[in-house]
Length: 277
Ligand SMILES: C[S@@+](CC[C@H](N)C(=O)[O-])C[C@H]1O[C@@H](n2cnc3c(N)ncnc32)[C@H](O)[C@@H]1O
Image 1 (cartoon, helix red, strand yellow):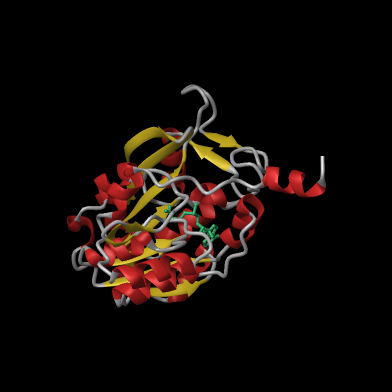
Image 2 (cartoon, rainbow, N blue to C red):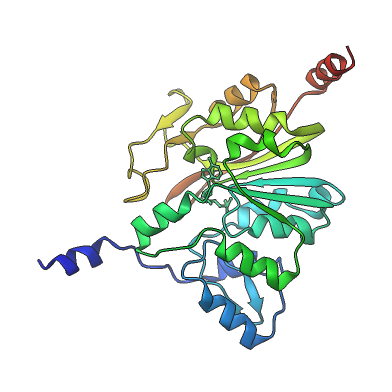
């Protein structure tokens, strides 16, 4: 077989946008003029999120059906609150928080995706290009920081909500990531978390460890799968012992788990007493 045929075989096609992605995208109405919408859509060589740029004009995001996440992303979660979105990629959830009334939103990404997008799809992407395009259309005030989520303490601020979607399984030390997020929560704050689930039996160990490329061919950054018990254990380690598992399901052949992590009232009282003492 010719080298070019082998190379072409290794590249994953961009999936078709289905109604499932459009339904989620429609939650953030951008309303750009159609010509502008098409120009912006075509100016970004690969989109992760599907955005509704104008009636009938959507970005062809590679992320599949995020509808199940909307259950934990109502206006009551965001109104007048400060929000940190780690691993934001094109920033759909940062912009959703802003549209739903967050008073401040900080989006963080180390742009690790540039590597796996190139390996999986053969596309060379400039970090943050999709995020900046949407921020421009929306006139958004979301602050974008290219940084590692493990370093969020360096932001020097606290947040009412930390969104941690699609990233916990991509860091080598998930406890360190959760601890970093727990450390920047304001009193009463919460982590809204979505990550790769586990297919192990319920009486099996609470974490599944993946080989590089195991989950998505040529994507070496998916390390873990988490069961509800695994998330509860991690939560306890970082002082967030109230772990509400909201959903467990399979999307496009991949197990996913959605949860909200908070400190119990007793733990919050101890922490508050420590701050006063
Ligand atoms: C699968 S995407 C998820 C995007 C979005 N949060 C969502 O779930 O729709 C994972 C994102 O996390 C980012 N990421 C991975 N490890 C990171 C780290 N240590 N610090 C910051 N961002 C990271 C990647 O660059 C990528 O943008």
